[in-house]
Image 1 (cartoon, chains in turn blue, green, purple, red):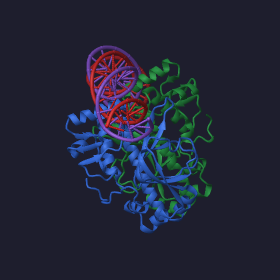
Image 2: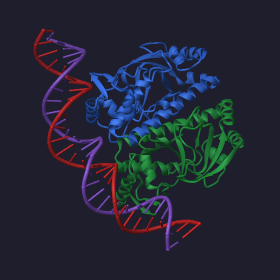
Image 3: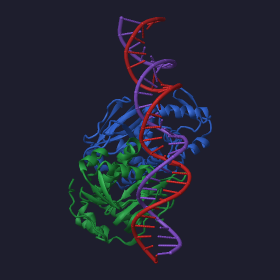
Length: 236
Length: 236
DNA sequence: CGGTTGTTTGAACTGATTCAATCTGTGTGG
DNA sequence: CCACACAGATTGAATCAGTTCAAACAACCG
């Protein structure tokens, strides 16, 4: 499962580097990097962007993890997408249908849609690049739907752990789990109580070892099998 | 809930009309309509496009409904997206992560990616148009995730019915339900047995009346409340 | 008429939720 | 350094929503 990209983006690495390692040509990465923007620190589990407000910004994650979430009328929260280091949230016409919060302390580059949109319109390669990213995000969303709709709770958690390991570019032996159990519940459509039980089960079955947030995958192939995880959908 | 678009696209209406009523400028709709393509009839619940093959086609639904689906390793099927009349499925680089089947007998316009992509690259307005459609599909996908992850079975079915009514441009009193109960189960992540019980419940509670596939919404506001349905996410 | 597809119903079962309490680790201010 | 607060993790018991399996029923069609 060794990734094609060897450079694991570390804290505060430049956006430019990250975009290049995601497959963007150098001069286009430069262009985005030089776009007027500001860099903000986002604290985890604090309000950052609320649902229903104008979303005329581009964001790129320089380090950390962002989540898009929706809140049902009965107040239950569902995380609908994640953005890892090097990934972005594109501007949307009209009001945002989702809020944004950080999963862990994150460093975000925020630009204006009015600066971003013309760049994309003017450069077909840029357009193709974001087109592919959108398709990847679509594929991930579909996989999440299968996860929530068709897999049991153990498989859901196992699948999320596998996806996270691949998207964070960590090796398949060991990962620092970035999520609280509540966040895993909000992603996989469960309760935190049950997530806790699933973790205990998985450890009892020898699928993983835990020490705090550190997770050792004892047998990657087996955990991938349990979670029905087939990483092809993550290819760009 | 009367829609902004008054023309309900009927069987075999031209793609051009449908795209125009979806907000595309006339000359651009003409351009797409004149793109080399063939029109195929697709029978419901028969294999049409399988998962894992090249998806170098554009498709537009002229009439009927298409579904994108995935099959979990344990064989359980999840429908991950629907495309109603006038909506499309854009080409994807690489292999498709989902299969395609029709929900009801449908008439599909199929073009080649190599004809479609240059058109989009050459016409910024076309690009903006599809960009907005993609964002709408994204918003629908997020809503489906909330549906599967956070709502109980009654709310899931109610929400799907509401969304379907709006996307089919039917009035909010009456609709011919296009789905089998098995399909509703595959969309909402349940079993067909339970969907059946939910329908019976909803009828017993006076939310709907049924005669075969015909559904009367006795009280639209109430069924929308039950399904936590707020249609803003469907706006283009 | 027989075949097929979809709907309906019952009974038993189970996976996950709910509620509530407890425990653990970490950071803060005195 | 200790006391305290706070967020997150863990556990148990009771409950329930939804599944599973199986069978019957209805509608449609060639």
